[in-house]
Length: 621
Image 1 (cartoon, helix red, strand yellow):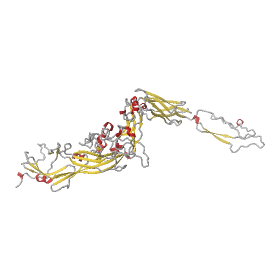
Image 2 (image 1 turned 45 degrees about the horizontal axis):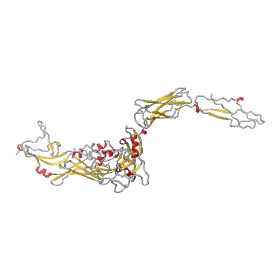
Image 3 (image 1 turned 90 degrees about the vertical axis):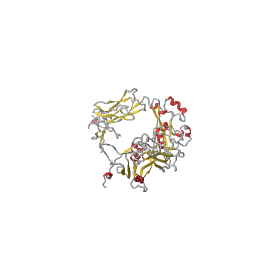
Image 4 (image 1 turned 135 degrees about the horizontal axis):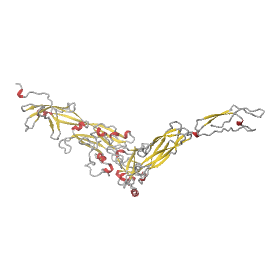
């Protein structure tokens, strides 16, 4: 069955003629289609015969072992090819089927079951193609099955996409699976390569946006001012006279160009540079996907690169093109630190004052003013709550809105108090005109950015943040406290003190730092003292107006803040009429109240009797 037998008889004799020392022993193997494991047989030398006077003998090596390997009949299941291509349908609702053959080679006498499934690559199941996961059963004698994959129309202009088809091992553990992965390429009818800018973009400082030819002569963009990414289809491109006609023929709309930015930290003392990293962190007032990159993202020596994707008039996106890497200049800057190359926390000034009733805009409010020096690349953050985790705090989402109600982290639409540090104004009214090009351009820099930078005097390198709050806001929203106990100024005056905590952080972007930011934190406490004349109140009291029908006087004897945070006033009264002070009456639902002449706010309060005496008419003589 496996080989032709050589019996121990004369038909299997091997004859050595005189002078011969070696003879072949021919063993004929028989071919079949069944796969078998390794088999063995033995060849044995029988009794020798010879006409020699000395005869013949068989040596010690009188037998040999032969192993038969059946690799040709081994069962193998695999894909017919490893790469397939299919064109995406042209119309919505259409689909195209690509057939992928799965073949079995070798012994087909047994049943094998394998699973075939798809896996996403750049193509997405459910959007670009229908996913497949099915079992294929090879019955006895079957050598091929076909798997059908269906490609759908998605209507998106994109590059060639792909997905993979995979073979799982034989569940019956009979066949070996080879070439277990095949790639299916979906060829786009209109690829993104059809929309491509004619040249790579350029990076210049926004100071030179109107004269990009000067950028070639400079040592790099200056620190402290935004940089701008200029594509070949932008009229301000240095070679626009050559590229403009190409952009027009390609129907590219430069105002719809998509941007992203990459940045790396300055090189070390040994000249070794860090890898470029994408700037994917947006703050509440800046975006990393605009034509400009704000100056908080880089510092002197930083390396910057922009990536632009062209978009035509139909909204179809093209390929991305990367600009050459530029290095931010170290010699020039708008607000350089006192010691070059070193940043840290500089002294700041904070003031808290009462505006009074005469202020035309913020009457009877408490004005908080914070002034701090500016350094190129610095982001100033102030709040009455402790600052931490700037990766989360600076994000545009609502986390900072709930945690920092009295802070410059809130845009004017997010402020919950009556006033905030940021307003809807985008320009400082005290500054006439622009000190620097495009300093107040919302289309280039964004309105959110301009509202924040309104508080920066770039010529003086000074930030000034101003906001006004009433007493309730400072105590409820800003974390302020009031102390009264033991605060006697002199014999005729006493005072209460308002304390407001203030946290100031100097924040700098760091591509290699933990969380992307490094910061220097300072803390202070602001105090505002209110003085009142106690002797006058004790001697003269508070009397009713002369024209009032009922006359009386009220003498405050003490004021304090209770355990519940409420104002507690102790007083005595002197009635100048015949009758009683009634705390409540079932027939007349009236409530005691206080109203101030400068505001429309009315405060209701409760009266408790601490001590009383009989009316004059009912006293005993």
